[in-house]
Length: 303
Length: 260
Ligand SMILES: Nc1ncnc2c1ncn2[C@@H]1O[C@H](COP(=O)(O)OP(=O)(O)O)[C@@H](O)[C@H]1O
Ligand SMILES: [Mg+2]
Image 1: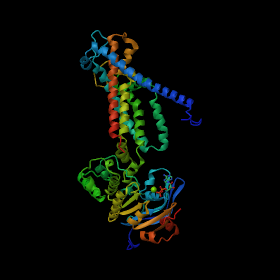
Image 2: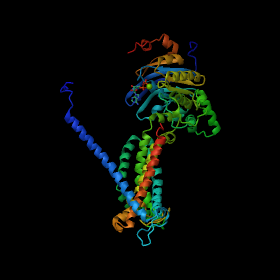
Image 3: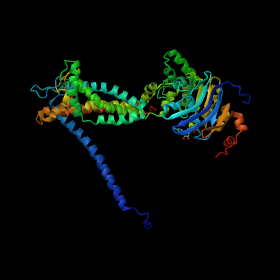
Image 4: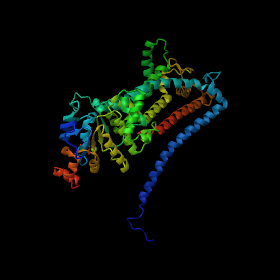
């Protein structure tokens, strides 16, 4: 075969550039996969050390969490109850309000209102959580104490409510996106039967967007479960096995902060607890992500 | 169809109807009768305003800002102008139902799709809804195919079945006038034939106004035909007359394919 003509010959510079770009992209992907794997590896291996000293049954069923005391107990239920209680309060605030806001913005608000409200919501989502924490501690708790004089200065209730306010923008914004993606043809079909705006929103648009709305809820719940600062500031950091939000309590995350801040010497078994607690937290969020994944799959072809 | 005379009672009548999308005038001074329990077709090239005209009857344009009607659509037996500001579009849609170009079943079961209009009207008696759903599905020639799978999603049906489901939905509320906007344009010839047959049966009970992109279809199913061009009603008449000896040159050109 003869040499290819100059115009058809392989362009070596271009070839080289393509390879470099490919390598850079691969590296970027590799770094993120690698860090995730490394985090999981460290969590699991350090937890392994922890579970050499503390039996799994104690970890799961003990009703005290006192890794700092001489008589140490490691019952994760204590921290889990704080996480569950504060998250439940947050979800009870965020889901109804977030859904209402989404329905209003998607189905009722005039164009001009939506143009202003959407960026405002996103701004709200960008406020550092430490500020929410102090808002709970210094504003909401005193306010609630006017109604409930017995409410302690640190409590899961006001932390949970403020956490709910914090995740409203996520729930509202993502639910609104899901509702706006519902084809106009479905709304028209509903109006054409004589339905009102509200009937159309509740009976057609929301059910059509249910998979997106459900993912928004799951994301909101994951945020609540993983939230740290608000609870560290306003929740009290006192391990307390209770599902009563009107009490102080520590959550998995706030405990990790406490230990990481240096109450315990590195390498001690108390210190190892944060890895076991972290693993627990990761499993919890993994469960929610799996639920979200399943929901999206199940309802994917709603329209 | 030659037996039709213009003495058939009126169901509705457009009088000097104009319509604007913002500043753009999409309909120009349309005058046209709609006769009771007859099928009236709207034909004309794409973009001439057929859908726009159809959607005036159920006030669909009210859903979007910037739209404006002028003139009137008299509705009988009420002798009321459907476009009047004092008329509630929701009440209008309670009596005038619509079937769209693309089947648009809700993400609900077959049963709930048909029951939708009844539920929206506050009907909650199970037995009433059961009866009306069955009657509507029979009316839409779908009952036999779906009676054992009423709980399945409407979206699981074939395209032609979905469109018949949408017809059943539009039928369940006992409308007086049904609007069809190119209901067969997304369907295969067999599904199209079944829907055409259905429309011919429906006119026993209800007045039908249908947009069609297909002239043979208009000739097959309609009693009256209107030819529209760039927002104007060029010619309206008994279907046979329009297709055999149109009065206007433009109509003839369009029908014989010499158009454009
Ligand atoms: N929502 C709208 N806004 C502005 N112009 C529109 C809108 N819908 C349709 N039109 C215009 O109005 C004219 C008539 O459209 P349409 O009624 O859909 O025609 P047809 O159904 O006969 O194909 C076209 O010129 C179209 O571009
Ligand atoms: Mg059209």
